[in-house]
Length: 170
Length: 426
Image (cartoon, rainbow over all chains, first blue to last red; front, side):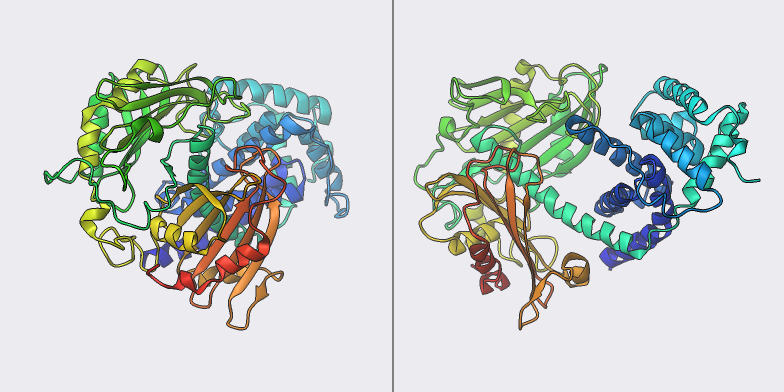
């Protein structure tokens, strides 16, 4: 039956992509894993709703990432109208490891960027998207993305220092 | 995925650091996937509810785009004796015909359809999409429906058309005017906002027209390429007020409405599964049938203010017990056994016959101030899911009109578990 074939296809896609979406969401939320889970749930829910159409696009994985980014930005809009974001980093400190210093510092630095700037950084440097693709995912112009990107890089340089290699593992 | 070459070593380091940090977050596990799917199922319900919930708002505060008929206690129980449009056998119109008609009536520009329906389906004809006159795309939709009247031979257009808020009352519109046209049709043209709280600048304008023969034409337009979730593309929607009026009043729409199969032509119980106009999937119920069942199950003594039932699998009433109006909505979905575990967690009760029952008291989902939503969600062994929700407001996006919903959880439970839902008839 068409309906159940669709359902299987969706389930396969969701299982294959949820890990990557979750990790993207963790970066977008600067380490707020609870919010990240919520965003991924919402994203998967929306994909489920539109699966018939999503499954026919060229790059469903890229589309899913776009939905996640927009879900995140919509959430930030809603939140910023009501309350100030609290810079909290749950579930980070309790998983100490060799790369702890880098992760914490980077997540804290990301957390200090405005949400849209953070989304640009994640799409450009984690998703390896071009400026144009980033612009399209964010419903913004390429020029706006370039501006945000250069501002975000400047701020990250200030926060992390010019040379990040001191944090990075060999 | 194409990559811009980074010329800056800092960018390369950032890329490496992000992958390091992101990769350390591990995997969320299967529970997240299941939760995502469950959310999709709920979203599907909510989307339906939003359509009619908005419609309830339309009749009462005048926001929305669907048709909601004043409740007269009889219109859904008996087939209409009046088939609008007379006895000439009209042709059927396809979804493409409806889009073509809209394109013909629009000023110069490009219309890209996103959804269209003709006269042959279970739902009323519709053309929706984005119209761009070269100055930015705006979402645009035209919905067609027929209003029937049992008692009178003609509809009273002034009473049936979308009412503007009373003078002096708080209005969600910048402007709202109802007038009578020379052919005795009534038309309301309004200029308002997509979000009543104006959290975004999306404007929603529309024209609502009812003719004495019962044609109902509803045109809506936005200054963004979608009603929600897309940025504003232009200061105002593409069609001026005069254009909106002319579009709604075009006689082409009335010909299409005349071609809609009427209840009278299909005979009584036309909406039960298996007969003409039946839903696409086996076991699905038309909104009209759900409305009839719900009207029989609602406690006596409630005033039924309005109702809506154009959607397959969904119907709603706005009822008033004398202490304020409240929306009551029902979703009926067959074949939901496969989703039982996702939808009904450990908190759900299982009845002796295997029916799962989950109860929830929570805030409304569409942001109306102080709105609470009480829900009883039931799934029978055979996969028939009946979900009933009651609100303490007449519309989900309106403000609360009372402290609690009109129905108690116990009453909702009784309605949801009624054996009436199993039957394909009333």
